[in-house]
Image (cartoon, rainbow over all chains, first blue to last red; front, side, top):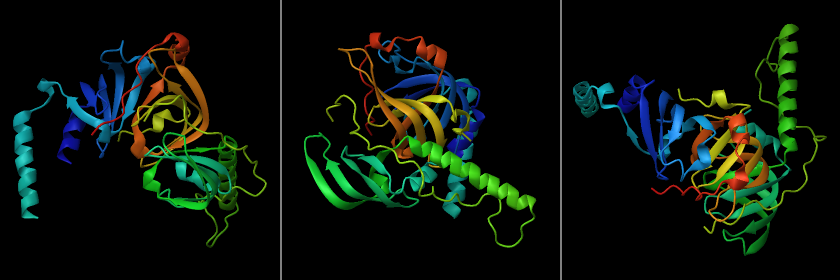
Length: 96
Length: 132
Length: 95
């Protein structure tokens, strides 16, 4: 659930998503849901020569389960805050 | 329009089902549930390479193993009409202040009537071989 | 919520886990991202020939098979002569 919150703070940031079929897509993060399904706007496929399949696609929905990585803009993530939040969540789960 | 309402309306209609392992099943839908588990009758089963065939009287397919279903084009209009009719019925029922347990507003859409147009049979599915 | 709502009645490109690319009009979807496409066609890519479009009609795809759904800019899509496009088919998903 924590990562869901992190992604919500990253809306309107430009991210790059690498999929499990090795496709790399960059775009502006418009929304995310509990499954980490992602909506991207203004998308661009890396290595477009090799992958012309999506040239006429400008925005897309990506299923969370097929995402391998999401590259985030470093300056948009407060890693100190994220570490603290992770410890807090781990602690609250240990109590339960 | 919900995928499951389309499937419900496809009862007794021909369809092609491809499983995740590439096998295909051609037959008429007998029944289905909300998990997309389905039973078909008069089935032609094809293996993933498309070179072996089996004829089955009836078969049951677990929903989680399905990749996609191909259904007759005519079903889309049938389902849309049915939904419009259900909506109209709901509206007039509300307008007339019908009380009690009646179908108010968003009841379950009933299945297409017997007179619904029947789509032609569906030919085999895959495109140019993918060699999988 | 990363919803598919904006895509209903729009022409979309659907990429499946086995690497297939299907274009069609999104007629509906549900919570599990099962999708109904009408007037759909498979686009078969190869290096040897141009793209081949195979008509499929009305299609119900299970959500767990979906990789990506993209809204097609129809003007931009029609401007491309598919018969001149040569490309490797998209690879299937590998876990």
